[in-house]
Amino acid sequence: MREIKFRAWDAENKTMFGSNCPNMLVHFDGQLNSFDVLGDTVGTYKTKQLALMQYTGLKDKNGKEIYEGDIVYMVANGITGPRAIEFKDGSFGVKPLKDSEDLWFIEVWHMDVEVIGNIYETPELLAVKYE
Image 1 (cartoon, one colour):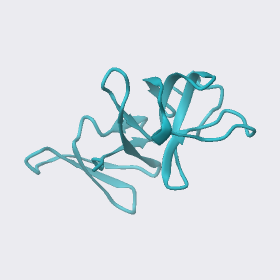
Image 2 (image 1 turned 45 degrees about the vertical axis):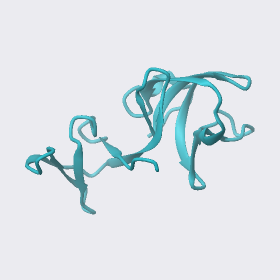
Image 3 (image 1 turned 90 degrees about the horizontal axis):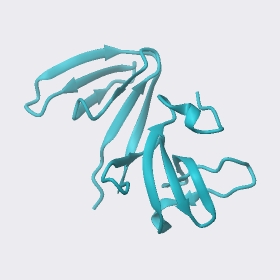
């Protein structure tokens, strides 16, 4: 069974939440509360631009968790270079760089991948820009 975890990008304050706050509560109005392992409030943040990213359940070649929105460097099936992880049609995959390419679903990966950044903090790693 896959572990269900999330992280969050606050575009307004340019801050990533997740690894530094293991427990988060996100409200519909954009407020985010973070808690430590004992349940004590670590912080309360208010933002209008919050993007949630889900953990894929996979780790890269270095043991780093791979999340939706991560940029991975991959070498497989004729694809070499950085690609973004995307959730589409109920599955995680590698986002195509051109409309003519198909989404590569990570369930069928037999490749060497390494997390090198994410689409929010290091979008320059891709030819495609994300908002």
